[in-house]
Length: 314
Image (cartoon, rainbow, N blue to C red; front, side):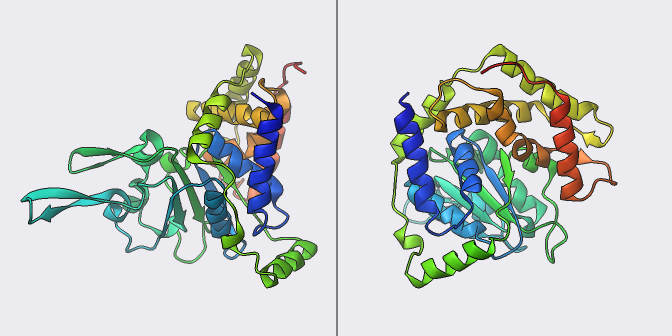
């Protein structure tokens, strides 16, 4: 692995996406980490801060074919997975592709859909395939789901099921821009810096090669033990009803490897785990009712993280 190549590619991708998303480079880096790690991303935020724009810009920078579905209560599972129709010319049933058969599937405002439609994504997210009328169809590779949702409690929304939350590698929030960043956003819009100006940085084949390089990043047993102890600590905390699953420890491991890769290293350090711990673990936990706010949960997560000693690896 070339450190110059890995750092340069990551910077170029973030630079292109930041043409339309101003002042949110750390969030963009974390989205890229999840894509390089082969995971899916949940963007949770209020309307209008750029969740959808970010997803489309990332697909353009990575050269990915994307489909977008604006979820509402009347979106059906077959709209996502596809359906069979009768072909009168052949006398056979023919499969009509659903929206999810693409490289990057943008599930916009996913928590406005019915639970049945939300669950239609599960097989594609976990297994990379969909089943329609007992026939299985593979989704194209690479495959990424970026789902956006408005905060729970907003009008017309409902909670995503726990099984689906656990399948998102990261939950991120863009948040409001600073005063200066919002002014710069307006200036760029006036100069014509729109989504069409976001250039492709890598090809799909290159992205698959990068994923293989990420898989090859070395992680010591001491760090694997550290990750397992962190996840086990969430299961033993009295403030948490349901702790992090083994899927969470697997996700934390591969995200740490991706973090090392974009910094030009072929080995993982404890700081790589620290960088993505909260965003990888927080949404998978079920907290006691007293800790209902994000602020309280983030504070508790920070305490849990600090209570587990990291190995002395430099």
